[in-house]
Amino acid sequence: MNVRPPLLSTFIPPLPETLVANLSALNIRTAPDFIFVSPAELLRRLPTGSITFRELKHHIAHVTQAFAGPAITGDKLILDALAHLEPVRSGLPALDDLVGGSFGGASGGRVIEISGPSASGKTALALHIVLHHLGSHQTDAALWLDTTGNLAPARLATLASCSSNDEPVQPLTRLNIAPAFDTAAAARAIEALDTESGNNKPQRPASRFRIVVLDTVTVLLGPQLSAVSSQGHAEMTTFMRLLREAAQKHALCILVLNDATAAGRPALGTSFAFMTDATLWLARGQGQDRELRTAEVLRSRVSVRSPFFFSLRVVSG
Image (tube, rainbow, N blue to C red):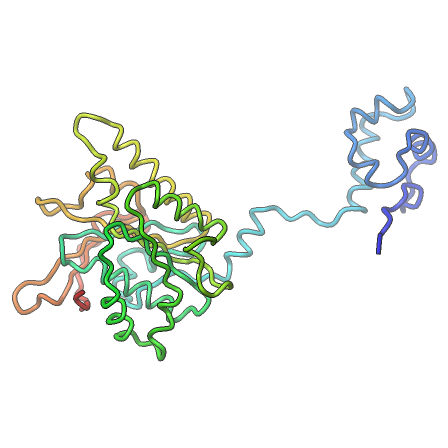
């Protein structure tokens, strides 16, 4: 059924008869005809002296208000869409407090660096966060970018079986794993979140990506860095800006796993720490406590840096 646009002669309160007649002579008889022509162009085409520019703009505003629906800005639509989202939490309140109460994933998104030496539990902690969130949010999905090809299915199954979910395998159906052996591949996977297409699309069409894990960023960016050239640093900055924009656009929790230097500090240099919202440092226990891990915030813009340590037990992979 076609709905005809309202005629200018039918508006209440009515437009001046002279204006309606002059517009009709220009074949401008309906509201769309009137409001979609610039006021300056209309004034030029109308008889000289028949109306002032100010009066014309006033009548256009009157017709627009009566004809068009209330305006809704894009910012409001985005905020309304994100209002129902819950932030991503680890299920360990003391750990969440270290990064400002959550790992992000709500309005604005966050990029959190998890760094530490080999076997400190970086991958295990990221998997724990992913499975904990997916287990309690049935329509959410996660994307895992594997830069080394070392994510063992056995570890996934073990961690899932240790979770508190009644159906431990069910969250794994919404964990999407994609190889990303260079920054170009990782960037393509991140950009594909706009359409949720290709191999990164969740098996459930209604799922929404809430978490992205990059395991590890060291392999992607480390070989590019050089003490004699700034090109690698520029590429690192560009890539991390891409992650930041994706986190903000999609309200994501992005976990960036980073290795440690021989000196016991996060890899990729001191400037890398300022490209994330927080740096969480993991360390392995000693002696009989080798299955325990301690976590410390080295730098954070979302929480107060605290010297507080706590322990969490992780499953070895």
